[in-house]
Amino acid sequence: MEEDCPFFPELYRLWDQEKETGEPISAADMRALVDLCTLCGLCPCPRIPMDLMRAKSYCIDKEGLPFSNKLLADVPRLAHLCGTFPGLVNKLLSYQPTSRLLSNIAKLHPDRQLPPFPQENFFQWARKKGLTTRREDCDRVTYFVGCTAGYLFPQIGQALVHILQHNGFHVYVPSQECCGMPNLMEGERDKTLQRALTNMNLLSETLDSGDPVISSCPTCGYYMKTILPERAYYSSAYQASVGAGEDEMKIPEDSRGGKKHKILKKSIYKEILKDDGYFTSLDPMTRIRLAEHFYDAGEYLARLYADGKFNTNLAGISGRMVYFAPCHQREQKIGTPYLDLLRLIPELEVSAVGGTNCCGMGGNFGYKAGFHEQSLAIGQPLIEKIRSLDPQGIITDCMSCRLQFNHALSCPVFHPLELLEQACR
Image 1 (cartoon, helix red, strand yellow):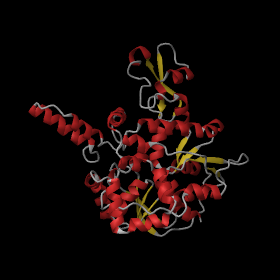
Image 2 (tube, rainbow, N blue to C red):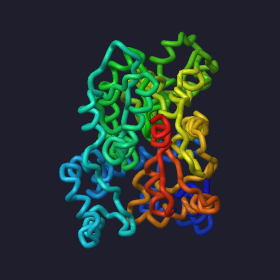
Image 3 (tube, helix red, strand yellow):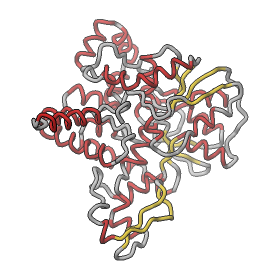
Image 4 (tube, rainbow, N blue to C red):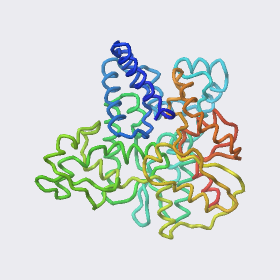
């Protein structure tokens, strides 16, 4: 964990310091420590990051959340404010004196540039295209857009819609909120739970019909599929639903649930395996149902291809590029579906890069003045690997990674859906 994680090296340093000097770790050290977790998902024990988020929420309950953190965590509100007059805002951001002033207000590092705000966000475009009306007479998927594709990079959401339409699907874009990951990372417990509950309710119609929910954002996918259902399978409601015996606990063998279970003795494990996580106050069965119907866009398209239902009549795209699978995609345990799909495009040469590396951005982590240098240090091994390959373009499905690559490298960065859409056209 020492290469890609800011938390563990500091934890080890504080522990060693206490053992060597006898001086206890201070409350200030502990407070600074919880801010170092970026919820990348690479941690070998899932309890560690979620316990850290609970600790951070405890701190925020006592201290309150600074305005700058609150501003960065609420992407929809920030996008609404800036997207009302995108031309004016983009001019202000490009003008150095006002850009520096805004960076100081939001406590952003001055070397970081916010992406320009689009003239029309994805949700506005979707309403114009009639995608917010649910059709009953066709093959249908529900699109959970997420904030980056929704408000900052609408071309990604549009690309997914065009690809799915090209393959015979109607795309339904229901009312939705931010998944809540930025609030979770900042320690806003009440806001996190409120957004999770709201999305569970808004997606209930889709869940009742059994339609798949698809997201182009790996962070939304990781949150909905891994973090939200955390420990829900240990709940009494789930155990009753699978007919667990009096001294049994049935635990799904597959991370997506399924019918195969490991059977453990309840008398041994009941105090260890229980639904006592961050989201325990929310209905465990709804959390499980949403997680089991939620798909990464690449995962879903790869499934269509495996079933012979993906239109492979693709135009060629000439280029030599590298593909980086981001942390939150890797932690969904779905392989590298985009890499396989991109290799269907004639003339496009794509090689994987990065392995277990992290780009270091960590959502908005790299934008904060106090973490900018650390963010770049974490991402340096990956950046050097990409430089050594000298590609004509970089492909990644995480927009935080895209922002980091745009900052540190000169070659263009694409979402895999952008290239797949181009090939479909």
